[in-house]
Length: 281
Image (tube, rainbow, N blue to C red; front, side, top):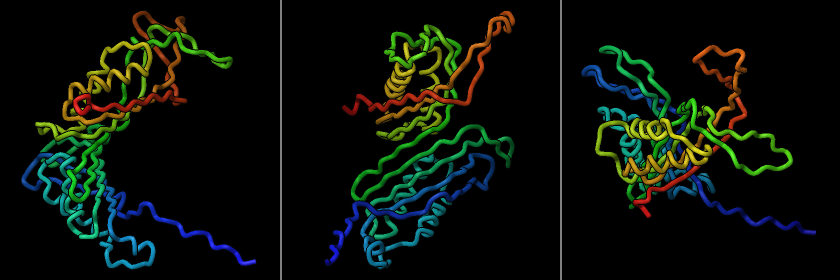
């Protein structure tokens, strides 16, 4: 019996690029900003023959993509990471007529000048993303990761559904601790030199401060809505909050005027919400 050959597979998407390379840039003219960036670049376009036949005539080497990022960083004068990502994407897209899409992700560590030639790490990393297609405006986005939040009171959780395995106790006024990740898309760049990630972080922490809620879900929703109302240049915002388990300390161990909770490494409660700016509806 003749075996029947399976039908050939059809490629639905293919890309290549350069990932996980790091760059540092600064001005030689004196103290100022320091760019500490990790890049990821991916391209799509009319180079399918490289995948199907090994024909590389339309493939620009991935190491050349890295060099375009270095060339963009060489022009850096303290501009935002969104502009670094967009500028790199534009360079890459123009470098090869076979390219029709370039996606550049840039993650930066934040540094603060502590002298005329020295800097110190000052906080968690943030990132920017530029997605550029031929004939379309560049789509910009960004993120911050692992923003620590803690409130001593104001978090409630009561009236929830129970099944036979539920042991959760109701709470009307409990402390809350956790880590927040935020991801966003931009309608436009803000009319300020302050970093987008710093502006979003400030808005998030302001929306969290002393806010009471009936659930973590309500808290995260109201924070996202508040940030989108305050930052009109945001198109959308995704929040992911990992709430840490807290255990109260027996009253017999406490001194007057001091509250103590015991923190645990996990498991975390996970709460996520995605919202778009109502101005875009």
